[in-house]
Image (tube, rainbow, N blue to C red; front, top):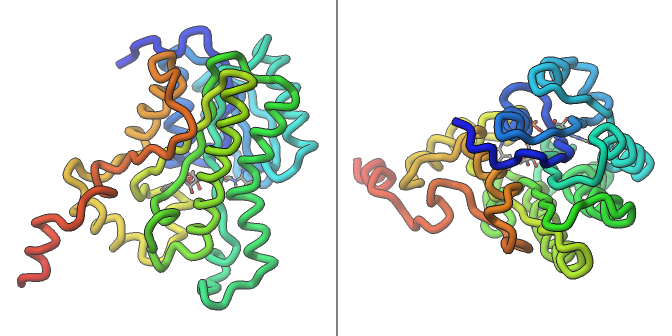
Length: 270
Ligand SMILES: NC(=O)c1ccc[n+]([C@@H]2O[C@H](COP(=O)([O-])OP(=O)(O)OC[C@H]3O[C@@H](n4cnc5c(N)ncnc54)[C@H](O)[C@@H]3O)[C@@H](O)[C@H]2O)c1
């Protein structure tokens, strides 16, 4: 169903890798709601080629950018505003990667070069995106910037490794940059704290299968899917949420406020 919530709005969507990606679903939903956008991903991710299908489907152009490179971000924002014919109304940062996780380095045995790289990609890149947009004055008033995060920023999930620290940093950037973007440009900045979701990044976390089932049983409404997340993001890009800013918004079927569920108790009573 389409409500035309984003008619006339323009933006950039980072992080669509394949059709499971949260950013992929978001691009499809934003398109259905009348939004126009440029798609971007790291040059290495483009080589896998799937993003072309999404671009075709959503009538959008692709501009490669490594989100850790200021030069790439400047080029992306310049070209995107040119292609879209003006300033931006929305930006989705849907980027995450931990080298320690990928290389099976335990949290108590981090390789700090890996840690730094993962932090740059997953956390600092959000500051870089915000700062480049800010300096270029590329956002329209009442625009909306959203990044994706996970509750491991507040509570410990042992296998989430250094991504927990990256997400804590990311959420802090949303608050800090949200202040300046709000004051100076009337732009909101928020993070969505999403349920575990079966994507490439999600499935990289050790024990993901057991964990997603546990979260499903712990959430009164069940886990939020990538499509649910896309819908929520559309609402945050729309004019219906103009005073929501500097927030970390839990989108998790109620998981974050549930102590225990009957299903979980039953499992332990067996
Ligand atoms: N899947 C989950 O369980 C879950 C839960 C909560 C939050 N999130 C967050 O959602 C976001 C999107 O992840 P996803 O689950 O859709 O997985 P995904 O693997 O589909 O997306 C991650 C994206 O990050 C991109 N990326 C990596 N390095 C990059 C770089 N240097 N420059 C630009 N892009 C780069 C990848 O190419 C990929 O498109 C991430 O921030 C992730 O942490 C995921």
